[in-house]
Image (cartoon, rainbow, N blue to C red; front, side):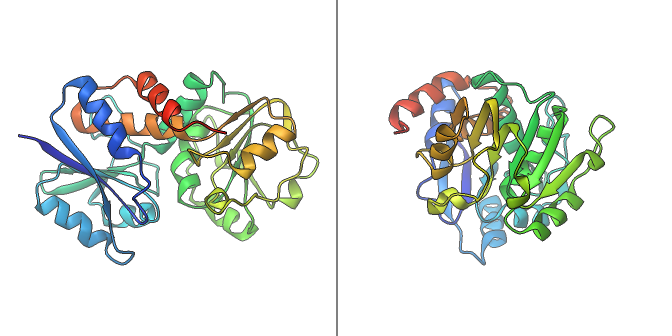
Length: 286
């Protein structure tokens, strides 16, 4: 019997997740279906309940429902399966598991981002100066896995400084990287600073806009990473023009986080390199 999964969002027609999970299923011999479901902006919880009632095994959650997903889960846990840390510190959820009349949730975005940076792009986060731009759901989903890598410096910048301060207050530090080691900044106050890794987790690229960061922000050899995928964003163009050595969109993150969700659901870890290579051929960056 085919097990059913889905991704819920609004909008959702652009999503590559069904294609990715179809490739994972074919590669691993798993009998699943995976579809994109458009939920009304005021109907996310009802959509989740409907899917669970219809026998779906789990789903992914994308914009704009990641914070709401955290509010409806019965259990936010890192023990979905014993060998995988689903991210109990995540306040924004992108992966749901329906099990034993419970909704279990966590976030694979940060794992996907770190894996894309460290494995696919061959860059280290450990010991690096990291700038995370944004204070919304995208940033929330990746902050703890990034901090777990033990960067030398970690700065959260946002157009509205108040939102960056509120975001910092949600961060749960560790002995290796306590919260006091995280700082916040407005974009203008970044002047004079340089970073080894600059991550755009804002919604600016969705609107073909550019965060107002200084031209000198990129240290020699810097990685510029935009979580948006499938297009050459203003941020990526800006990074190339102003000294970033490596410029990447978020397609690798999308594939890697999908692989972690697949592993949680199916207990099988798919090969991501072949899937990413195929998608890169279909979605070239100009």
